[in-house]
Length: 184
Ligand SMILES: Cc1cc2nc3c(=O)[nH]c(=O)nc-3n(C[C@H](O)[C@H](O)[C@H](O)COP(=O)(O)O)c2cc1C
Image (tube, rainbow, N blue to C red; front, side, top):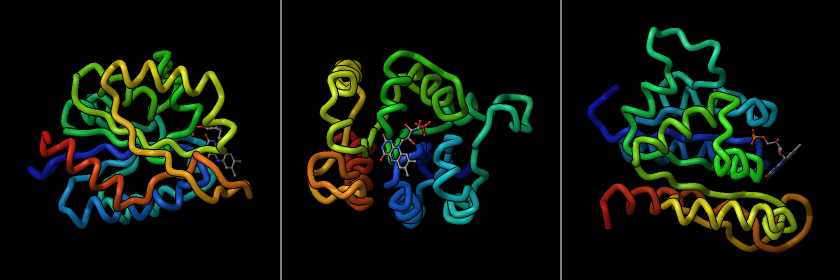
């Protein structure tokens, strides 16, 4: 890994995944060493090849294809300065809140959370999902633990409605990440 600040970019299976490619590109343009970890559902919406090319690093998609003696999710969690999950699905919020580690991303996130370093989540989902008591409760718990959120914003949603649930624009997520890293 390079000496630049290292960011883990977690990508989940939300429709806003197309914006995650732009976020990855913007982070690399700002000279961050970006390591993408994708869920299986994210892979159904977008190719890992996009993130491989944009991040210039291997993309972690499975715990069982890790090639090094030290599991990649452990090495990444130790090396990274910040973890961003964008888009962050309701499913990821639920699993992360309750300590479920059943894939590469949730296992990396749980390991990273144990290091005490900062985590930034950019939720993106249907407005009714965002308004659901379970999601609201999970976010409350995560905020209490010091997990930071950017968004979601209000506006036009892919499901054809308007409301809260839009993932923030990549520039806004980048700004939030830089603010956290600068310690301000
Ligand atoms: C086309 C499509 C778009 C989806 N968009 C979202 C979304 O924006 N937010 C969300 O929370 N779930 C969304 N889902 C549902 C998630 O993909 C589903 O809950 C899945 O279990 C998430 O898995 P992951 O968190 O491991 O990626 C979408 C599903 C489909 C088929």
